[in-house]
Amino acid sequence: MPHTLTARQDVRVRRDARDLRTLYYIVLAGLFLLSVGLGLLWCRNKVTSAAYEISQATARRDALRETSRRLRLDIERERSPQRIEKIASDDLGLVHPSGAQIVNIK
Image (cartoon, rainbow, N blue to C red; front, side, top):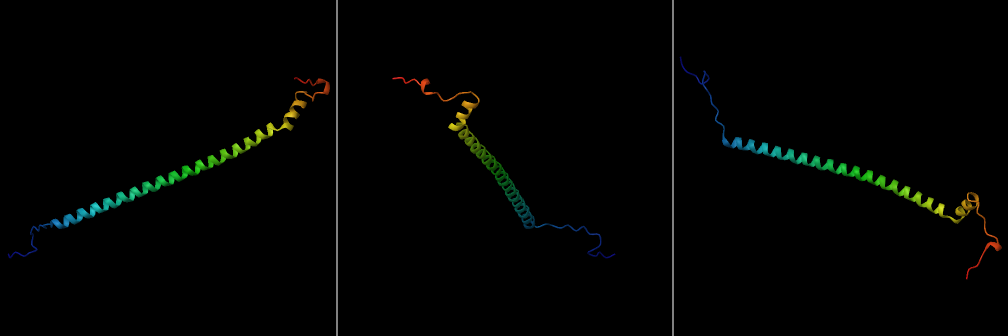
C-alpha cells in the first residue's frame, strides 16, 4: 500500500519565533492602550467630582453671603435711633427729661 501525504501522518507545525514576538507586542500594545484608557477615565471622574464639589461650595458660599447681607441689614435696623427711642418709650416707659430734670455738671 503506497503511502500518500495525507494518510495518517503526524503533521507538526513549527512556529516561527517572529510570529510569537509580534503577538507579544500586540498584547503589550493592547494592555498599554487599556491602561491609558482607564487612566483617562479615572482622570475624567476626578475632574467631574471636583467640579461637582466646586458647584456645591459655590452654592453654599452664595447662601452664606445672602445670610450675611440679611444679618447686616437686621443689625442696622436694630441700631437705628428711631427704633431705640421707640423701645425706650413704649417698652421701658422712658420719656425725654424736662428742663428742670437736666443738671449741668461743670
